[in-house]
Amino acid sequence: MALHHPRLPAVASVQRSVARWESAAPTLPDERYQLLLAHLYARTPAGQLSVGPGSDLAELLGALLDLGESESRVAVLRTALVRTATDSGGVLALLSTPL
Image 1: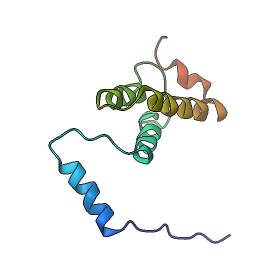
Image 2 (image 1 turned 120 degrees about the horizontal axis):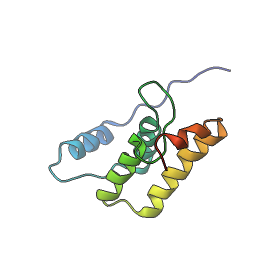
Image 3 (image 1 turned 90 degrees about the horizontal axis):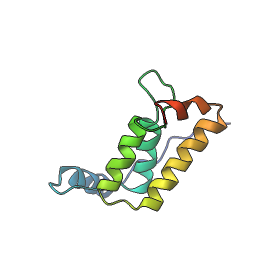
Image 4 (image 1 turned 30 degrees about the horizontal axis):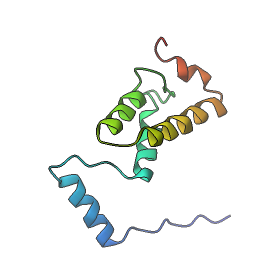
């Protein structure tokens, strides 16, 4: 099986992204970026999954709600991360802090 290089984004797409980042108004990340952020925030610096109350993931999801993301979208992200934790045997990630 040969690995292929991912397609590079178009210049216009990069320019739009930079313009959003530099905007003074709060900007909500798109769905793909939210999913990437959720996967990153679900891990501790040691690489362990932590998706329970008080975790970095919980803080991220709260921030997305504050930026105007819908509760249903945040629930989808939370569910995806909990499935990742439990499907890979990381049920203890749910106990990062007392429930």
